[in-house]
Image (cartoon, rainbow, N blue to C red; front, side):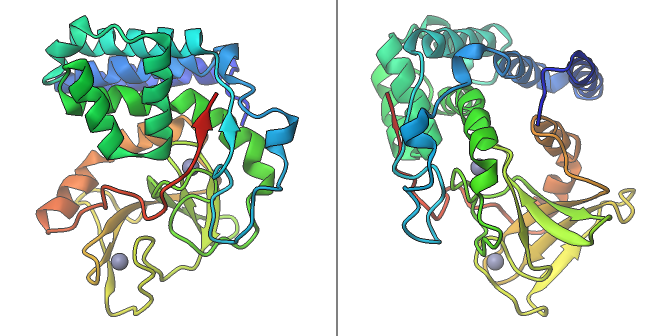
Amino acid sequence: MQRTASGLRADTAARLAELERQRPEWHAWFRLLSEAERALDDAGWRTPLDEAESGDKFVDSEDVPLLNGRALQVDADVAQRLVRRLASTAAVGHLPDAASLRWYRPSAADAVALIEAAVRQDLTELAALADAAGTERGPLMSVAHLAALPLLQSCGRLLADQVPRHWPHGYCPICGAWPILAERRGLDRSRRLRCGRCAAEWEVQWLCCAYCDERDHERLGSLVAEDGGETLKVETCSSCQGYLKSIATLQGIPSFELLLRDLETVELDLVAVQRGYGRPEESRFRLKVRLV
Ligand SMILES: [Zn+2]
Ligand SMILES: [Zn+2]
């Protein structure tokens, strides 16, 4: 998805501004997202896979996401600049508990290690890095996940063609994360899961829990927001108590817009959580990937 077009860029900025108007209490979060969105245009993130790393030789099993086993090339200075910028944006914007990030000045190597842990979704390592740096864990994890976005979105673009036509899992075929939402596509009547990190999309069966593969329709349900109509739903599973937001669309949602849609539909998260549903914190697949 080409996303450097200025029209799309202006649209994203306008949507963020509108969200901020509706939810002034999330000001800090919107500023962080804008910062991450700007970083997507940084040429330093565009070529994480050289020729040797972009082939399909790594895929030795149909259960393994495409990024597994690869070495991703990053410019350590670009990584350091982004992590520092996000950390200071979080501190200055008063993200909750982020005051300790004000003094967080990671070396280039530390910034790369932080992004690597975020790409692997290694929460233990992220917590250890926060402890070592003397910062609160939660805000540094938010910074880490956003700092990994430009790299993951580049990987998503470069590997999109290699996603297997039939990927039967709930986790992302490229980066191993759980989907951020499901799309119910009007044109081809398909159900597709979307990754909020690398923006991958993969078609799955209609009645199947993304997290535990439950297919018993009596254990799968849906919730709708009071004024959401049929467009917005929450898919629920009573076997694992998991939920996933589901949006009816005509065609695929552009990559960065997935994050905006996720924010715009936070009412659905509240409805689901109030009913006792949740989203698994850790992905089932632990990705092995290195940043060099
Ligand atoms: Zn992904
Ligand atoms: Zn389930």
